[in-house]
Image 1 (tube, rainbow, N blue to C red):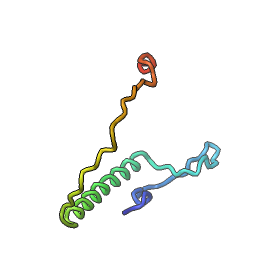
Image 2 (image 1 turned 120 degrees about the vertical axis):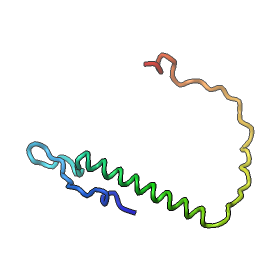
Image 3 (image 1 turned 90 degrees about the vertical axis):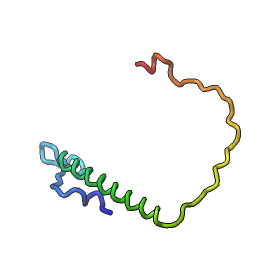
Length: 90
């Protein structure tokens, strides 16, 4: 798997004030470069998901798990809305 920095194959700039001082210690990249990096990361995630699911299917016979037992009776409690309808509409 790649690290996030490996998806950015572009120039990285430092954020500065008009005086030339460094504003923050946060790297800045162009929007298009960031979009391309995110798209590449999502494509890799789909590939890894496919490989993982294929490996799980081939790893052995299907497991039959027992059904989950109910926790118990659900208490009958009154549910009151937190906000009034006029506050929700605002």
